[in-house]
Length: 114
Image 1 (cartoon, rainbow, N blue to C red):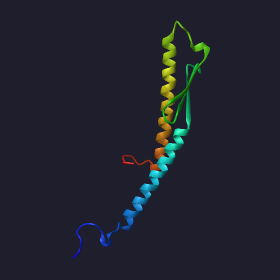
Image 2: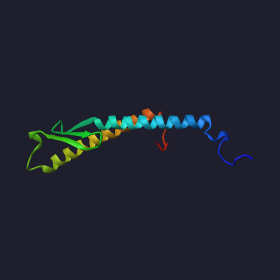
Image 3: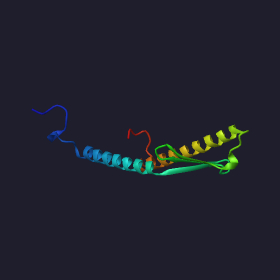
């Protein structure tokens, strides 16, 4: 009497086994790519270089540099805006690098649950 469900011989068919191997390979590549990204730094400037912010691939601010010209006690709002602009740009750079890495791994396929 034949078993219900499953595949003859109890194993996965060749195509399914290959698909699983490919998925595992892609997962390893994604993990390696993520680790490489986390080790990188991204630097952005605002206000013509008056504010420089460096962000890690982990999306953590690691350094903020201010030129003396950027510090005007009578205009703190401008300094705040420049810091915010530099941080946002650095984070955008991380996101772009992350997206580019993912596109390289998936061949541009979207909507996959990887």
